[in-house]
Amino acid sequence: MKKSVALPARMAQLKEGKLFQWYSANLSRGQIFVKLFIYVFLSVVAFVFVYPFLYMVITSTKSVNDLYDLSVNWIPRSFHKENYTYAWKMLGYPRHFLISAFLTGAGVTLKVLCCSFIGYGFARYKFFGKNLLFFMAILSIIMPVQTILLPQYLIFANLQWTGSYLPLLVPQIFGYGLKGGLFIFLFRQFFLNLPTSLEEAARIDGCGSFKTFWRVALPTVRTSVVVTVVLAMVWHWNDYYEPSIYLNNAQMLPLPSMLPQVKAAYDSLFGGAIDATASNAGALVSEGTLMAAIFLVVLPVLIVYAFLQKKFMQGIERSGLGGD
Amino acid sequence: MNKRVAHLNKSPLQEFWRQNGIGYLFLAPFLILFAVFVILPIVIAIGLSFTNYNMIQDATWAGLANYKNLFLNDNVFLTALKNTFVFALFIGPIGYLLSFFMAWLINSMKFRRFLTLAFYAPSICSGIAMATVWLTLFSNDRTGYINNFLLNLGIISEPILWNQSAQYIFPAVIIMSVWMSMGSGFLVFLAGLQGLPTEVFEAGKIDGIKNRWQELAQLVLPLMKPQLLFGAINAIVGSFSVFDVVYQFAGMPTPNYAGHTIVAHLYDYAFLRFQMGYASAVSVVLFLITFILGRVVMRVLRSDD
Image (cartoon, rainbow over all chains, first blue to last red; front, side, top):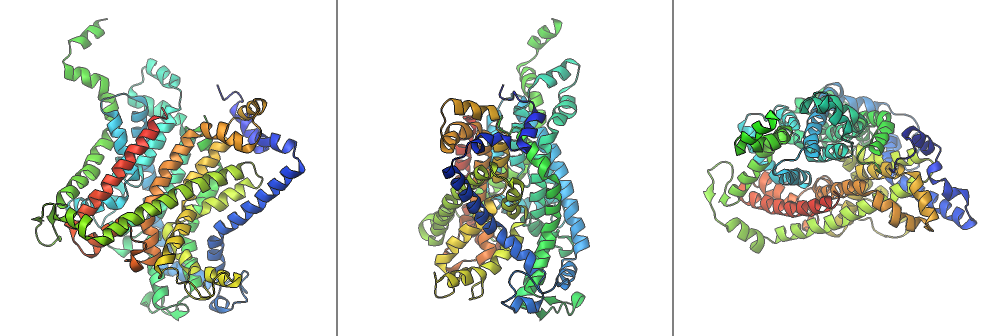
């Protein structure tokens, strides 16, 4: 009912900013003043939000001399690329990047497939005890991981899974694991907002329940799947807690878990001292190196997000999280 | 016809399966794992909470002693309980309101894409990475960026020891947490606002809606219920995960236990002191709190259907 303007037309309107045109069409002097004020306010707040980020990027290019020269605040005298080469070495970048990429890729794939399946069950089927089960899913979202960390660890230790990637991957299959409940909730919303007519038609054509889900329902919500993929990707890439508990071998750690080592080297040899570890003897671990390491860790997610942002926003608009 | 009759002849169990079976099959993965990795640990934790257990010797029965100590003798726990709620009360609502307000302001502005990225970028970056950046910004000496700024403005005359003095840990942690919490909630709000149908606003204008505040209260908020719910759940989760920020920023234990939360207490007893029985009692309390919160969330969600 609400959607009387066709979707492509609405997207075009949005692009031209026509949605709120009636605000700007008849602006009095007071309103212009208000608008100006909002711009200034937003710019200030945006600057505050971006500041730590800018600080990181700028500091990562500074040489030790620039770091201690108070006149060099925003623009470093030269691009000190050694920061990046040292950080690259200390992080063991190629190896740990691949580990992170594997864990993120596998985790996101498993999570999206399984949580959509479970969410579909919640959205479409009536069965005894449904409310209780949904309550448990919600509970698993808001319960801090630490609540059951200890017994969980004991269970994984008994299964002899600690020291492998299994504790990080297997729970995904079952819709648990990193924020799994949240994804079940999201997919339930997506499917609840999908009209049932298509699926009924498929059923009449002789599709079974699982085939209907796989061939009809899931492809129909694919724009929304992008939303879950982006959210899951960001969270999996940044997950630091679980790997640091279950993986005891430094060679197996994903990329973000390597940062504390760089930080420790920086702390113990505070700024500009010689890093004594044999592999990078002579490397200067300055604040610049530390910031370069952080930037290298967050960069892949930023790049992928930049490519997916548009689809992501469209996905939310069209899915159950959109206005209608 | 025959098929229908055949159903009627089946046993009650078969009838139950016919009605509920497929639903259970879809949920099977969830059920199995939830039982193994959530319910079982909770049961283990409840069991351990009545014992003394240090992971080396066998557990010995302690009765209610752990709980008695927790509530009657352990002042640090009471501080942690209080801190957890105070943190949650500040970070949850501030983060929630701020992210909605920002999304609402940005929505009608130009440079939307740039502003969106500016507000979302912090939460794409891993918490540990950003905590390290903040640590240098909140550095304790005169040249630390925030100290330097405040000194220049003449607001303070001595540099503040941000992560070592009990009274300043709290505001610093609130600032960092709110900064990081402007994430998925904000994005979902913004996309929801952009998806609102134009005609509703035109109709509202004809019906006598005068300004943006009226429009917000009478049109935008009711239409955005799904996103607001998602944001609320997100905010609750965020407000309870403050432990990570405190731990990165001020270490453990914090001076005067100013940043001590229930999760920190749990971590302390489980992974530093290895008093598993006592730690389990703490986690049971934590579980009960989330259980109550879960009931509240369910009630809100049910009013949605």
